[in-house]
Image (cartoon, rainbow, N blue to C red; front, side, top):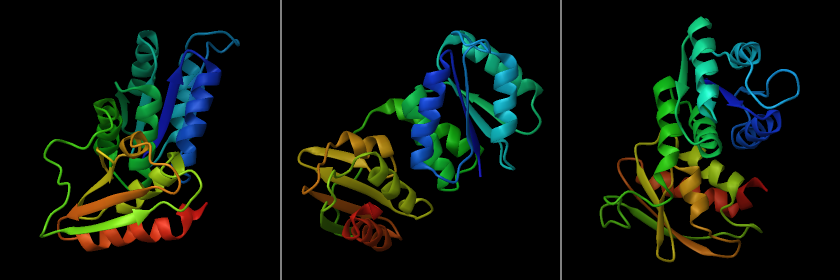
Length: 222
């Protein structure tokens, strides 16, 4: 499983982002590296290097950063690290969440990096994503949990679909979201008690819809 490192000029910010991403992906190693090493704002090479080691996994490590000088330090630490380490230009919070969910789902190093980069693309489903299809599967799903598709339920949906050969779209009102994207699902703003439409195409379409329905039926394990 791929590990993640969150590099920020602020120790509190790095820790907070790592904590948030960790809630979405409990099995992924996520290590924060924030501050200048003396309690101030900045970045510290030794801290980043230690975080890369702490997050180390057989498949490699993806490093995310907040500001330009953090990238420089991250690049230096990545060059000296053992194993495969990718420093990725992506929105820090959104990228960390997307990368963590992808890693939890078993994506490889490139897939996790792509998930982080793709977090900058917004919450809507792609233009060619199917709303519903006669040769696919479609279901109305009631969100009986208290808060609807917030962070953890959205992460559960995305993780449950990882590895399936299906394109799944969730619709709420006039908004659509790619169900593989935690941020897209959260962007729907679907609250508890709402009804969403789940549509899927592909060989595993029926299984994909079944998994989403099952999660909703058990209140997303909340």
